[in-house]
Length: 206
Image 1: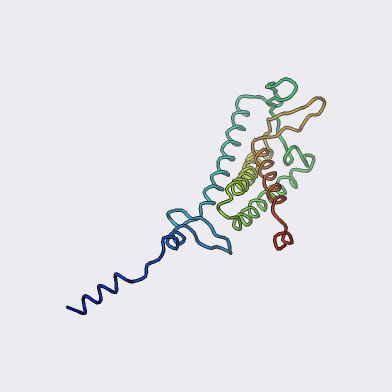
Image 2: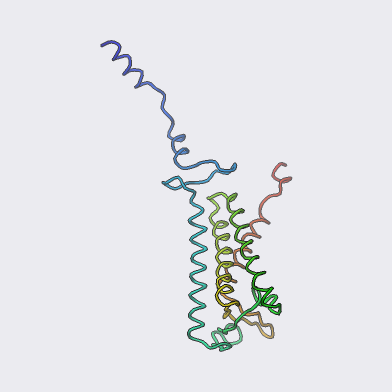
């Protein structure tokens, strides 16, 4: 009987893990030197954010293009803000904002598909090193990837990209673009501004 009482006493006085340690074990894990928040299932939360942003961009891009193609004839224009904004249905054989549109189809389409695929792969590789807490950067990566995929779908299905957002200021006219182009531009701007704001290694050590 005395042995049983001693065993029970030892179990009661066994040192327990602190709440902080338990919370760290439940909510974080270290991957490649970066601490990532995890969901209740133990998966990093940044991937749903990135994939959700990319999926939203692709959905909005393809839906807007489908509406324009169904409701407008090629080269039709619908004024929105006089002298500034309009909807103009055009087909772009080049990259964003009509770049490289004059190249031969046999070279142009495979080239842009390859560039888009490489861009998505590089974004995924970069995203692996981004901490999950940096939601804006994660979303920016998803926006760029979604824009690249949206225009890639057009090139695969149509051999060209549907553009319809037409902006001009005075005598200056910006080449027509679409939702995918906008997402790519915004995402790249966010990533560039973040890179500028990050301290250099020399400053971080000083």
